[in-house]
Image 1: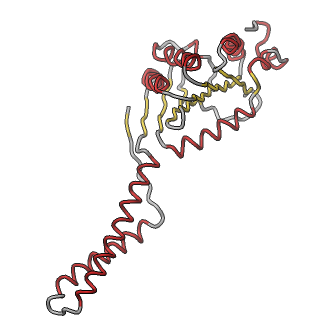
Image 2 (image 1 turned 135 degrees about the vertical axis):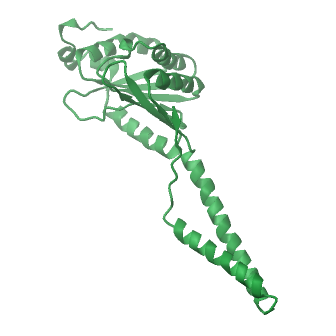
Image 3 (image 1 turned 120 degrees about the horizontal axis):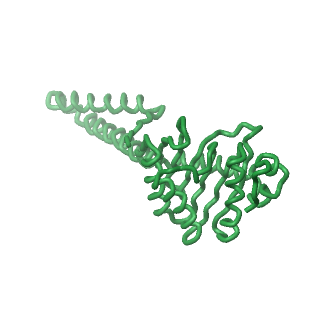
Length: 245
């Protein structure tokens, strides 16, 4: 895992730095010559106040930038690293977990212990502490069957809600994500095989809020899980091997 902090300069940073430099130079020159020219004493006081003003503006801007970005960006190179961190984050969640799953193979095919624990933790959270909303992208018979297998779990757990988006004939960003409360976001990137996966965690409130809005848009476009499993589209995608949950 690698943490990276990215500093983003505001449009007015350069001019504020110029103004601060100007007042600091003025303070130096006025303090040097005020003994020779006492009339410069008032100018020195004004220059000191000006320098303090611009310095405080930059300190305030730095504090706001750090609060907005939260200075955390963590990269995960393996399936195990990603799911281990996401599992622990779900365990700390308080209100709502939003998840999307857009892959060609269902999570039941994942072999790592960490991945199995992560998906189990999602259900435990819905059972005990909060609300889970999951969007499943369906592009083949195997994913359609996993949807059918989820029906009983949804019926037994009122806090677990699932909608389906069929991705066979429409363009939806193939992004598997986990949004935890209003604080953190995990994004997974599929590798060349079903077992290979990497990802990223962002603790940036503005970015998390943006993806929450995008999630809600996809949620509105999705079909309720039970309705999907009963539909002709499910039968067409799943084929003769389908068994309703």
